[in-house]
Image 1 (cartoon, helix red, strand yellow):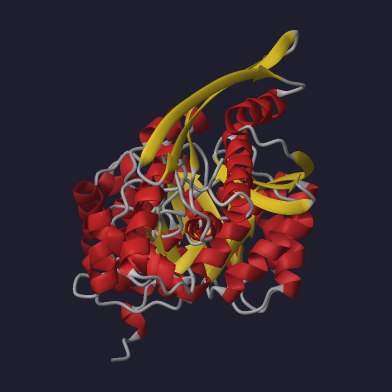
Image 2 (cartoon, rainbow, N blue to C red):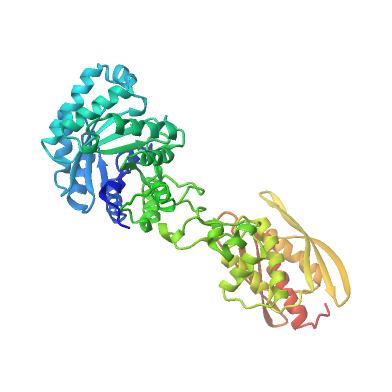
Length: 515
């Protein structure tokens, strides 16, 4: 059902103004333009492009965005004085839909300590600022800075006066993130009730996150009649940041019974917008960040993975595709169960009997205890090792390697040898030019098989600090070459596994299991 304009929540994105005020988040001219274009693609209603009076660079950026970005309203911020407002207009006037956003504080704390003025002086400055801005364009927003700590009767009188002066949007900021949702919702309801001409303007809110309640306060404001939400991508901004646009939009989308309103945001562009802002500002999104964190649609627990494979609704309240994430991720780790592991084997194209799959699952669990995540390449290597068809005559039981600057590399190796029903424990130690060489010489002593190492290669199977190393060796025995492969999160262990793999091939294929 199509909602009326009255029931539409418009999104005012201030990533390029308040968001860029995050310490260390400054953007270049071209970077700001890239972000603005992406915000337009995401279909935000208003882009606050910057604070034109703050610097010549910011003025030029706002001007460029006004000239080049089509679709959203392009807004500039200004204090309640002639120079700020005039400068702001000269930057945004190139937009087909320009807005001047002027502000002044209304709390007694700010009036007395920061502005060092009286209530009447601030009242007059607010009205005069709106009148001046109105002489340039029709779309005027007024913000009562620190509104949530302002005297309610004084705040209402200022709001009523600026609407009479021509303000089309009145913003009620929780500038320092001090309000609680019930408290802030009541403030919006009171303004809506007490301000006689409030129907002539849109009520906006701008909630900071100092108590972690920016999104909650914004949603409480919507419930009580606010129809413009000021927010940023990833919730970036001064101090603890702002209300996050992605969280507010998806809360509305997910809970329509509580928020019977429409919106214009293209939610499928949310993840792309998040990545762009994070990459350009250098502010990393925490893994468990709602909606856009890398773990937002990731599941490792075996119970959760089992539920997800049966019906995604068991553990996901929204579709990852709705926000532009390609798909849910079943992270294979030590908490994963058989269902998820077997599903991944199938997805990778393997058709294995139940016995082999159970053996692989046991080896997967051992590997998962060594590293945080097990990737597809890790699984490929597990399968390759398990189904290679080489009988395991020798297997590693114990390894101790010593190496370092000024230390002679030594290795003590203990192998288990199984031939038919006979099992032996064999141990030797040796020195070498390095830890791998020492280990190989110790293995040669144990097996009594003299081989020539022809080639040795090492590569990382997967990314990250805990990536597995895969070692491939080519050894020559009696004129024939044998290939061995081993993998482990420990390079020396991977090297030993590869060498043992080649030795087992020699024993089975050349010596008939006699050695």
